[in-house]
Each structure stands twice: as C-alpha cells, then as structure tokens.
Amino acid sequence: MSDFTLPEDKAARMERCSVFYTDVVPHNHALGLKLVDIGPGEATVELPYADFLVGNPETGVLAGGPVTTLIDASCGSAVFLKMGRFAPLVTLDLRIDYLRPARPGVSLTCVAECYKITRQVAFVRALVHQGDKSDPVASAQGTFMKTEE
Amino acid sequence: MSETTPAPLPIADLVRQVRQTREYRKLTDAIPYTRYMGIGVENLAGEMLCRMAYSPKLIGNSLLPALHGGTLGALLESAAIFELLLQTDTERVPKVISLTVDFLRSGKPQDTFAKALITRQGRRVANVRVEAWQDDRTRPIASAHALFLLAEP
Image 1 (tube, helix red, strand yellow):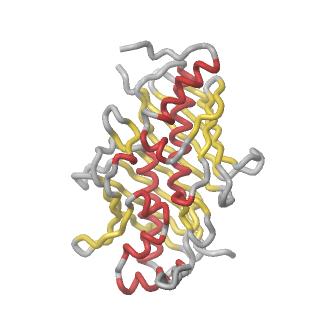
Image 2 (cartoon, one colour):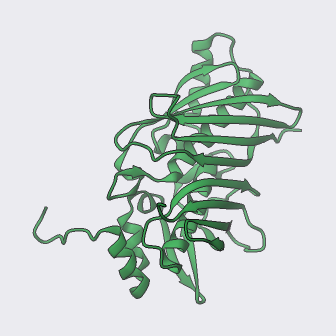
C-alpha cells in the first residue's frame, strides 16, 4: 500500500484529510460535511444546515443525530492529525452535552482537538458552535482506539 | 398549500393520535431526519422497538464496510425520544441534555434495532438507557445513556 504519512505542508495535508469528507466516508458526504481548517491535532469541520436534517419540523431545529455524526467525524480527523498519519481507528465512546438548541438555517462548526494520545488510546474534546465560539451549541469528549498491531 | 394535502398536524397532536392508533410511521415520517435516516418504530412480539433500515448512505467505513458511528448515535437517541413520546404521557418533545454512547462492535451493512429503557422519569428530567443490536440481541453493537429535559420550570 501507499504511504499513510500525512504531508508536512498544510494545504497538502488538508487535501489528504479531505478525502474522508468526499469519497471514503459516504455518510460524511451524504450530510455535506466539509473540512474547513486543520491544526496540529486539531480539525474544524462544517455541517451546512439542510431541511432533511431537521428533528423538529415546527421549529426547524436540527436533530441530534447530525450533530453526533459531525462530532464523531471531526474527532477522528483530529486524531489522524495528532498522529500525523492515517491508521485504523475506532470510536470507543463519545459524550455530548447539548448546551443550547442550534439556530435554524445556520451551519454548525465543530472544532475538535486531540489533546492526548497514548500507544493505543486517543483522547479528544470538541466544541460545536454557529460562528461564535463563546456561545457554543454542544461540547463533547471522546476516546478512540488505534486498531493496528 | 395544495388543497388535496391536509395541513400537517402539530407534533403534539400527532403524538397523541399515534399513541392511540400505533401508526408509528405517521410520526417518524413527519420528522425529516428520521425519515431520511430510515429510522422507524415497530411493534415486534408486543414490544416497541426502533429499526434503522440499512442504506449505503449510512456507511462510515467503506473498506470494512461498517456503519458510521454517528448513525448509531442517531438511532440510539431517536429510540430514547420515541420511547418517551410514545410510552409516557409527556406533553412536550423531550430536549436532550446529554448523550453518552459506547461503541461496542462495528455495525454491519444491515438493519439495526434499538430498545430504550426509561430508568427514571422525574417531573423535569428523564434518564434513559438504550441498546442497539443487529443479528443477536445479546451482542449489542452500541449502547447509550441519555438525559432529557421534559418541562420548563
């Protein structure tokens, strides 16, 4: 197989990581998730507002499911960026606190940070906002496990 | 509005109606996200369960292939909400406070089931546990516990 190490150059790194939002992960693509920024051990992913993601048709507020998917995807990317390479990874657990209802019609942005990685386990925290990080919609904490030998 | 299409019922009225008629599809189809995800409510052997019908758009790992973790979270949360809406007499759509999901096994590309259990229902908060499985109910693929706000103070 080809090299799974991520390139040093930020633009090239971003392009490599973006395949998880275009081809490799059909459900990320179905929801329209888009990788918008990266940092060392950090990924920022956007979920555009869409009518088919609504959980309450009377208010137009998004369902929780798309938020869970957004967080899971962003956290996974943050772990790859911390490792500097792609490696088989599974989500062990994810805890999401819903801080306020998302405003209808506005996209959601998730900033995920892998703040600790051990030989087997990665620890990630994430914040979901709608343009203002000081007024978040959700916060999350997840653990991931590397599944390679 | 077309004259032949009746105006949609407010969700609270629809919930009251579906509690009586058990035409769950009317409710799950009225919610855009559950309709999109293929998440429905069924009575199987006298027990109310949730089912997420498999479709390729639910895949998270094309190589294995395996369902996206987010879809399992969505099914577990939906099962908890429908349990509260249909098996209790809550008047409002419960608002999720927090959701904790344990991913236990990878989800195969097939239908997934979920059953919610209300562990405590207070006046304002409900605690719910949920399990999801595929072929074998004794080997769950994901489980969750969730907190919901039932009413304003």
